[in-house]
Image (cartoon, rainbow, N blue to C red; front, side):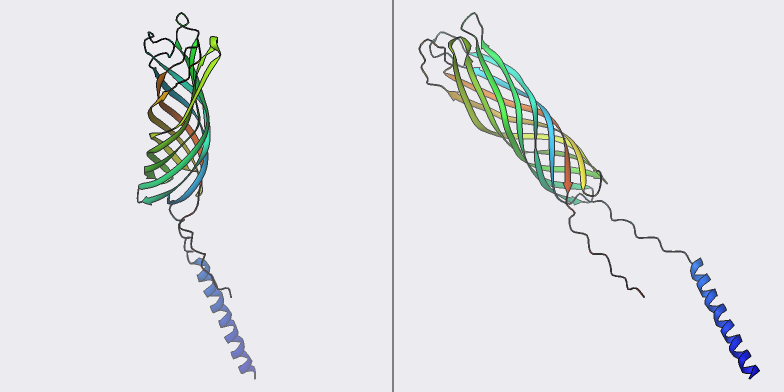
Length: 260
C-alpha cells in the first residue's frame, strides 16, 4: 500500500510541475500586437455649416435719363462688403491619393454697397444701391489627400438673389430691381480631419454672374429716371466651416470571440 501511495504522490507532483511549466512558458511567449487601425478615408457623404466674409464688385452702366435725352451715359463701379453663412452637403470618393466629390451649398447673406451715379452739379443726387441676399452653388471637387489633410479645387454652377435700387434723393424717387442671376464659381481650399468623422476647412471662392440689363418705362414728371441700365456682378469670398463626415461604407461588426 505504501508503494501505491508513493506512486500516486509522485504522479501528482509530476502533473503539477508539468502544468506549472506550461503556464510559465505561456506567460513568457510574446503577445501578438493588436491589428492596426484602418487607414483614414475621405470616402462618404457629409454635411456641415460655414461662415465667411465677402467683397463683391458691381459695375453699373446707365444709358441715359428719361427726362434728359442730352445726358451722356455714365458708368460707375463700386464694392459691396458683408458676411454670409450657410449649409453645405456632398459626397466624396477616394481613389488612393485622389479624392473626387460633388457638393451643394446654400447661403444667406448681407452683402451691400452703394455709389453716386450722377454728380450733384447735374441732377439731384442719384445713387445706385446693390445687395446680395442669398446665393448658392452646385460644384465638383478634386483633391489630393495627404492622409487626414485634403487640398482641393472646387468649381461649378452658381446662383444669386441680387437686388438693387436707383434712388433720386431730391425727388423722392426709388426704383427697385431684383433678379435671380446665374453664373459660375471657382476656388480652392484645405480640409483637415480632426477625428474620423469631424473635419474643418478653410476656402477661397470667386463668383461671376455676368451682366444683366434692365429697362424702366416709368414717367415721373420732373424726376430723372434711368431708362436703361445694366449691372455686372462678381464676388470674392473667404470662409471657414465645420463638417460631419458619415462613415462609409459602414464598419463591419466586431468578430464574436467564444469565452470558456
